[in-house]
Image 1: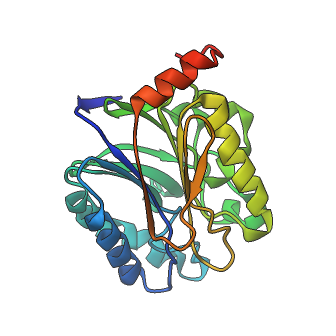
Image 2: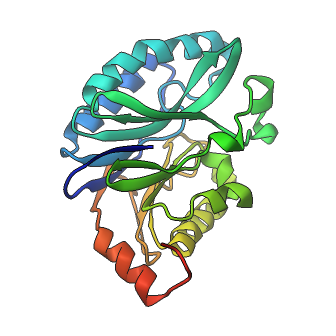
Length: 246
């Protein structure tokens, strides 16, 4: 899938806490998105609007419909990537979305559910075949949703991407896994990795932007970490250490 091509972009990794107030979470996301520059690619945490609020799961699913139109408007001139719960054909999925310039240009369901956390009890699993590298304004974007970061079949499908977005709700007890896997992904693919994890207590809080050389910058206490996107850096890295990625 391809959209139009324009000039230089910025990359932005978000880090914020999801509360029990869905509308407050939406306003936090919209406020942060508004602060980003035009032509930014922004990655927010997995299900950041509702969290995994299984006690109120029907309400969480319903809220996605309310939020979508507002997010579309806020994405004018920008790109936003994150996930939300949606119901399709009677089944509930955790769908990754790419909002771009007022439209949803890509959507797919999480293909690897975290059964240890009970995800399979509440939602259906997506298909690997729906995985796709999407070209937005000349930048090839792949998405790995949290637990998907552990699976080689999906990692292989990221090859050739310029930016790999990782919207996550990653457990704090496995923080080093998230850090190592996301950094390795940038090194292996010689591309940018933009990881966004929640600031909630149970999460790693390791939102970051990692360069094609594997140099990682973490949000720490910043709600929005910004780095310049450089296609030249990707090209030079792949040329210097040629592992066959085009």
